[in-house]
Image (tube, rainbow over all chains, first blue to last red; front, side, top):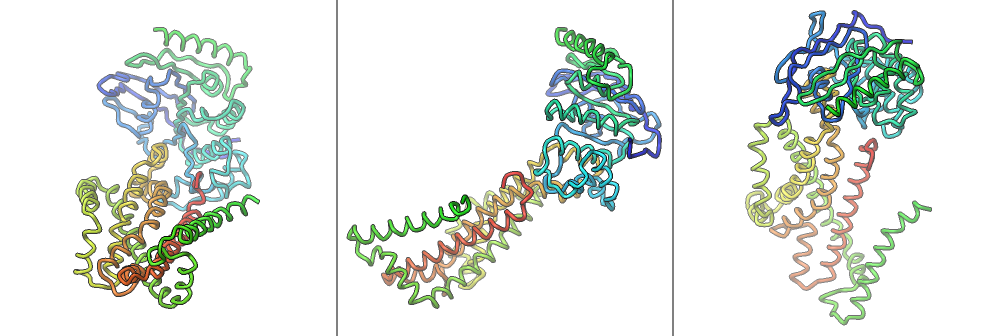
Amino acid sequence: MNSETLSTPPPSLELRGLALHYEGQPLFEGLDLTVQAGRCTALLGASGVGKTSLLRIAAGLAAPDAGTVRANDGLPLPGRVAWMGQQDLLYPWARALENVTLGSRLRGEKPDKARARDLLAAVGLAGRERALPKELSGGMRQRVALARTLYENRPVVLMDEPFSALDAITRATMQELAARLLAGRTALLITHDPMEACRLGHSLYVMAGRPARLGHEIAVPGTPPRAPDDEALLHTQGELMRALLESRAA
Amino acid sequence: MKHIREALRPLVTLFGLLALWWAVAKFTGIPSFLLPGPVAVAKVLAAQSGFLLQNTLVTLVEIVLGLGLGTLFGGSLALAMVFSRGLQRWLLPLLLLSQAVPVFALAPLLVLWLGFGLASKALMAVLIIFFPVTAAFYDGLRRTEPGWLDLARTMGASNITILLHVRLMAALPAFGAGLRIAAAVAPIGAILGEWAGASEGLGYVMLNANARMQTDLMFAALVLLAAMTILLWVAVDVVLKKLLHWAPDT
């Protein structure tokens, strides 16, 4: 059940010739990536390889030293991208419902409380609208963050290891929920968890080296969210693990 | 049970100190015109209650006025410095200069300029307290969780909205810490001002009593000053705890 529908079909995201230097050293140069429309692309790689920098550039939060980020429908990207960070990033002074409607309030629009309430119910938090973040568990907070992302109703969703702080069981539940509710959007997911990439991604890339390059596309058969014991998933996970280990050795 | 113990602890400390004071005054043979015992001081407190209360009120008004204005001034200064880098470059040296000049040396000058009345004392209190408020608030405003800022930017919030809705809110616990320090040291400013020249107030009473060897009266004024400072701090603390109930660790 996807409680939100997009008004226009989601664009694909085209990252072309991106370069970024950090303290004089190239983090990546001439990097190309196409995030296909309406599908989830997962990006894996070791810590410090530049995944988060790449995502920040895609989100318009940082400027690359060279290269462009654009949508293939030619329309501007700002205002069409939603962001999920490594933590839930709930504002501690705002109640659950206010955190969900955060975008409206920051843009000076009237918050749509009824829709926020529906979204909280969709992530299993009906009745907790007035809870403060400190009164919620890590998993519940991440659910509020997901509802907040859905409330924005953007065609493109960028996720930076959004479930890395959760325990294994909570993470698995959140992955399913997120895949279900975000289906149909153009998603770029950064993760260091091969299982997560294989459960959620339509296609996977390994980012490795310095300057970093992207490996060949690894397509996962089937539709996300895949069961943890799905045969295609296990096969791809093995392939992915091998690619990650080779990239480390190279 | 735990509440009772917590409420009892300050009382035990208080009575312990009183007993120690009483024992030192009673058994060391220090003459009572140098160190009057608690009983003698209590007698003065009772006998001159009207006079003392009236002067306590004068000092209280000076302190509260100084605290209010100093907080307002310190808070605005911190906001201005965070809002504009140019302003920050101009204001930071001024801020340091204001602390490099010993406030005690300014007291006679302020009395000369502003007279014996309320203004010079309140201004002394302002001078003493605006720095901890500015420093703590400024620090808090600069240390906003970067993820909160990223999130707000991807939601299309303007810089001014981010300052007022995110950074300001996130800095409130730090602001509260500065305010607690301010509440504890504000009386120093008022008393310094009264010592430099006044016709009423607890500092004036203390100075006069000291000159006439009325040590018991001086101690009575000191006890009232201490009690007032503690009550002021507790009041500020209670208000802050209520306002910052959302913060994870207050």
